[in-house]
Length: 119
Image: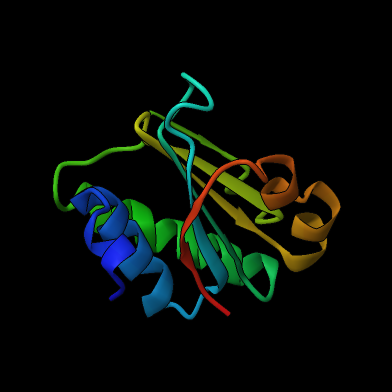
């Protein structure tokens, strides 16, 4: 765990752990504080297939739900191309690689510091 990761809220660390448990790819956490009032952080990761993306999302929902942290809104779970989990203080974006390349959220939010960045 990096120094930057230690500064993250516990619920984001749980989301990261759930993603890493299922071998999510290209995990990144963007700090949006001061850039938008919509949320404080984006957690972005990719799966290798639609089923993998759905599995990562379901793992996050279970792991966070087990700690009393529930998504306010969920989109895209049935298709698995782009799953959005809105936990209010942070939003998780889980992508199929092609969909992630198309939308390029990291580029759209290039002003946001990356607090966690994986391979």
